[in-house]
Image 1 (spheres, rainbow, N blue to C red):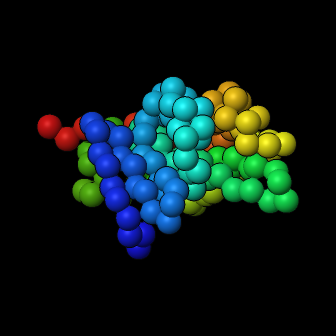
Image 2: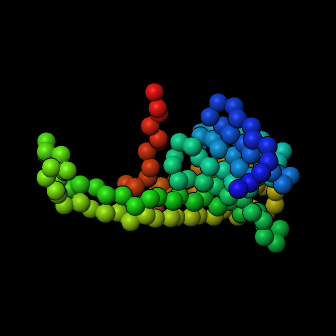
Length: 146
């Protein structure tokens, strides 16, 4: 468990620890809007996308190259193949089981300034790649509690 300072404004949550922005939770549109500004100010370790369950971005460096990794992790799901008004608990039906899955895609940057300048566009490309890989399993936004 990370220990640090947590700031929350609306649905955005930021955890600062170890001298960096260790984790940011924000909507996908929010990430596109603030990514360059955030990365210009702080090193960021992980970004969780609140309106696309299972979607995260991670940043790392290796030998002077910055790496933005988008990852989509989906749980196992069961889909009933039965149609009709009788609930499946009363009339067992055939189900299709989709195993859990994880997809990842990387975008490399020659330096921090390139990362800061192109992160939103790169994140959008990674999301498009992950969406294509996940197909009809792309997650719906979480339901709001009333």
